[in-house]
Image (cartoon, rainbow, N blue to C red; front, side, top):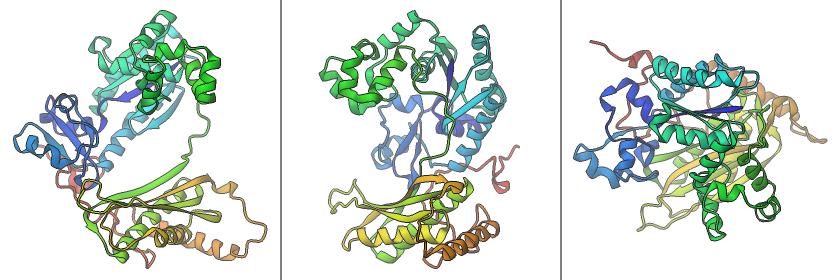
Length: 421
């Protein structure tokens, strides 16, 4: 059996832990630079606010006092996530963190009769110890556990825990679940399925397997088997990330090449540091740029380019150089850029780096690796780096990011501890 633990409206819930006056009120959390909505409370959903809505479109609700906006505070959210995951890891034999606010619990070896009490206890403990409300869906497969979690979150009668542990419950759950809500299908494929007469998860589960494989290949067949209670998405044995992205929207649009290049260098350096932190290396580096899609009066341009390294690397010098090489290819004069970012992928463990037969840069690579590790030891984690490449900006790469509504970093910064009077 699997249990999916999902933190309800996680970013908003983190804000409410330290600002209880927000309970029961419409609250949204904004993206970097206070750009658009990335998280909503149930009350803000009831107002009709959609994910991705720009702040300027809901400004009237804010000014009238009907809506509270919060700038993203990822340091706080990450710390609160770690607290929830620690509680889960101490309670079950195996946990697979799926995202910042979701985790699968592998319930092997736990008697089925004990599972309802275990899950109910976790809902209460997490709320009491962290202040975060969670919902738990339990089922024989991960895909069904996702569906069960949806019911646990949507209907208060479940008291945070929904079990789909027999065939009668499975069929009822599938009948009540739109196919667009099925993990592995989603809203992108839903219109195509609707045109074929498939509107619910049950419709999809009952189609002949041969038909599913013909139209949706092996991935679609696995999803169908999971809906029918056959485990196809096994417990993960390798949780290493496949890619790392660092990007930011800018407070003001940038047109000049050099300031934009320095930000790209900052993002690439951050990616390289994260690779080293995880003991991995990447062979592909992609740089992308966005203009402001909300400014219909301006020319639009959304380029990207990928640079392939001779060998997977994690040192700052190679990653930044590759990112800037891609930047030089895609940058065009005359555009006002609102966002930029760097993605590193084709990630492998450092111990598995394949070195080219004729590696003429081996000595330089060893020196760069050693220098990057020295930078990690000297540079503080959350302060302006003492050592950086000349192509980077001085100070933190987060400088200049608008966050007019950010709450305190109550759990990670001594200068922002909550004050009790």
